[in-house]
Image 1: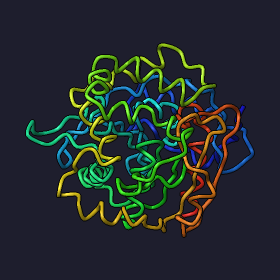
Image 2: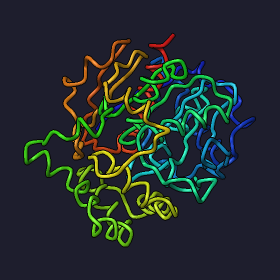
Image 3: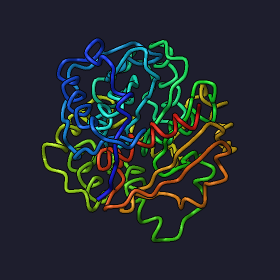
Image 4: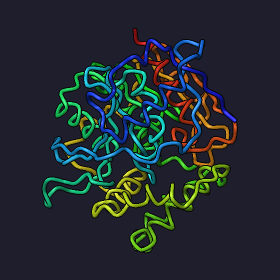
Amino acid sequence: MNTIKSLRSSDVRRDLLRNGIITFAVAVIVAIGSIKGQSNKGEVPQIQPATNTSFGPLKQIDAGLLNVGYVDAGPADGPAVILLHGWPYDIYSYADVTPLLASAGYRVIVPYLRGYGTTRFLSTATFRNGQPSALAVDIINLMDALKIEKATIAGFDWGARTADIIAALWPGRCKAIVSVSGYLIGSPESNKKPLPPKAELAWWYQFYFATARGRAGYEEYRHDFAKLIWQTASPKWNFDDATFNRSAASFDNPDHVAIVIHNYRWRIGLAEGESRYDDLEKRLAENPVITVPAIALEGDANGAPHPDAASYRNKFSGKYAYRLITGGVGHNLPQEAPEAFAQAVIDVNGFAR
């Protein structure tokens, strides 16, 4: 079992109700109550995963090409933290992390990525593009819409890759990052190199999505498909049906299949991107070094494809730490080990001071 200690009591003497939603604020107050009496400063309280199952009403805002659905928790004047989910997951990966950070005084933004949940394209004519650079631009546009100049950005899977890209291309907008599996920036060109058979097997779904049958199969069985990925990517995570179903509802977004299929086809050079992102992709193809403070996390039972930590150490030139989270933690690290994830966000903010 992974263990997390407690936050400073001084960090939690804040009026959460002034900006929070009542339902969510109650969860935050519970988290605060567990902090009192603890002596270890700067550390989050212990929390049982799946303690929180609701965010309360979401907000919506026009940002770039999208109308984005998002959670906005914690004090409006707190340091901003943006938490990004992956595929096939959604904002509920952060249901426990969010109140932990809000109770520590952070303003926590948790958006649905394009193709998920309540996020929608503003125009039916917009190409349903899953390029990693497009997702990163979405987050920059969201920051602009929310008037957030700089934020700590944390994520896993697609979200970790997006955090990496923003840190690399827009370091002035990124205070620090937490990235599960470290450095995930890539390109179609770099993905041309074949992997050993066992490694290729782990990417079976990418090759399935490359076919018409794969697209049709994902369209028809997207919930079953997602559940299989959850099980294989986190083989020791005993999630229940209610936990899965809360997230699976976000895959009913009308653009979900198009975004997912384009993302994986683009990665291996089977789908074209948009010219508006060409300059960004050229810079990313050079595997730029990340200069902002960073903490890389990895679960000891991550069943999804992921790089060895030693392979990307030199891609981080700022203050850096790597943490292996033990106790059977898989790919969906923030939901499986919320204490460890929240602690990393708080600690990396300390790096940036």
